[in-house]
Length: 322
Image (cartoon, rainbow, N blue to C red; front, side, top):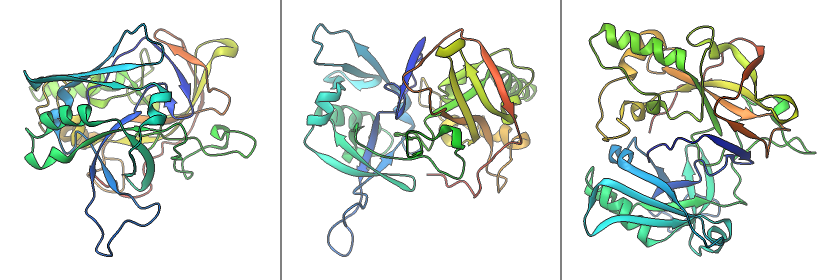
């Protein structure tokens, strides 16, 4: 769904508060051996990669006097007059009470999620069926407070481990890591290359980062950042940048209209093909919190300090698109 800009946020064990807590899934076929085994995924995550029309769905918080509810309104310019919006109650108590649970496959992980009800599913289905009528079985789910999905330990520094037992941090329902960091300088360089081809510049929303940093020394300087500090003093948040983020056709989807083209992947392939194969192009950096930065906040305008630098890290294997 479409990204939402905010001016400040805190972090919890799943990443930024309220970020990537909802997800779309579709049911998997029943196995030939008759039923799903315990822990086996019953549903598979479903994104703009399959249905670009999802970019037209806007989520907005709804102010409510009822403190037992945290309502999110879903709407889209593609909706029909008789089904033009839906609401989801995302209050933790409500999420916990949703009775229908699935084991959802997210890349190579399986995560327990709760189905948030028919109203949201029917609204989303009315949009994505414009891409493909077979998408009518889509469901909207939420991560549970108890859900576990650890980040890939191959990329995680020791300082990002959490608690007495040095547990790996959680990834929530993101592609793999809870935070994505981008810089305006890198986008400016990309847009310069697009303009040289006579093409229109692209907004940062194409890349859906959580944190955007300005006034960096040069484009893609973030490739070499290992740790950064956001804010001042004891309230500052420390992020560890663990590896580059490979880009797929989702970034080629206009985040207002849902229309899909070849950019920015076509141009990025000319100077950012840095992975195991030429199709693996990178923009922005995946990040995790330092172990002591949970429950702290960041704000638009906070100063950013580069604490350590090192060699860039890219995916250790070919990126699997889906």
